[in-house]
Length: 295
Image (cartoon, rainbow, N blue to C red):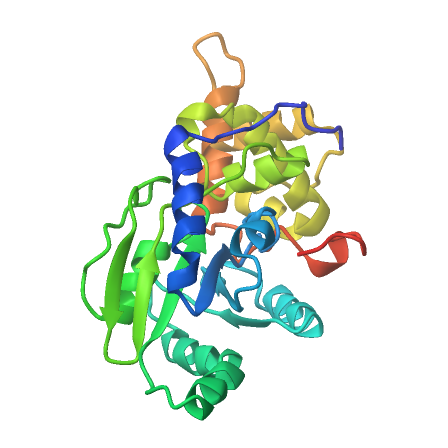
């Protein structure tokens, strides 16, 4: 397959820079960081500046939208994190799956700190956690599930949460919600494509044909059978333009000039990926990452 065009995707609105400063200021108030990532793209949806931002705070990784990811790949990620001494949980905040594990995992991570506090004669108190994640990864939905009521504003557009707020979850947990924070520059352009394809970046900022091309290349490489079945293609062409044309014809997306409607076809491909028409997909795999990369 020919490579996708080198479109650069960047999105760092002013409120995100402000949010990063606020997160740094509030760190001393919390015991643990809940890092929410998209289970389909655990590396691409994890802010590489996070270690610098949270310093030495304990961290629990929540692989959200696990229902949309390839289950076997998610299990590989959980094992991968465990090798680094990190606890990761597969959750689905939309359906409320995995919520009960979060408190147990938090207590396990903070066990030594709680014992030290007890030895000092300090009374047990609610665990204070800060939720950090990029836009549209499901932070507000997760908070509402944990709190069992609609407190945090939700929306399937990136950038809904703009301010910090404390939310009580029973007597055992208090959550500090934060706005989604991306980072100023994606070092790897592929990261931008993966974020765009999974809906973390506003569509109005994107060239949808470039995103669709990236999605097609991924499906052609990893899930060719699903691609052929979805668009009723008997044999996959190796050329991307030919494949685009075949999908347009298969869908009946033809312009008045009797040419394939590439714009409409691109929107259809991206929508089909997001709506799981190809089944559960994982775009990041542990084996994709170079040994030297810190996650």
